[in-house]
Amino acid sequence: MTETEGKVKVSLRALEARCKRYAETHDGDTLKRCRQGTSAHAELGDYYFVDVRGNYVTASGWSEETLIEWAREKGILKPYEEVAA
Image (tube, rainbow, N blue to C red; front, side, top):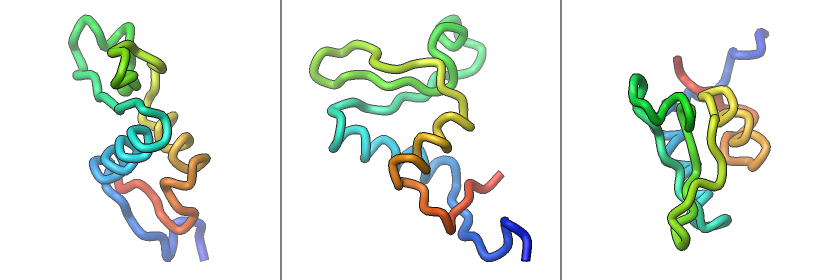
């Protein structure tokens, strides 16, 4: 049995929604996705977090892989789940 057999597929959009809900309830931040090709993308990366109360960036420069790792660390993405390509 390979590592990916028997895993439940989760779409990237569903993972983004889960991460956003987690950040809003635990950290008071919100997850934002930066559009590719914009001037801000070079500075902020694919994903960044914004403090809702102060309206400032708390974390930036995150790639899709970084978001997946963070979701696994926080328990948002379970061991039996994988992000669908």
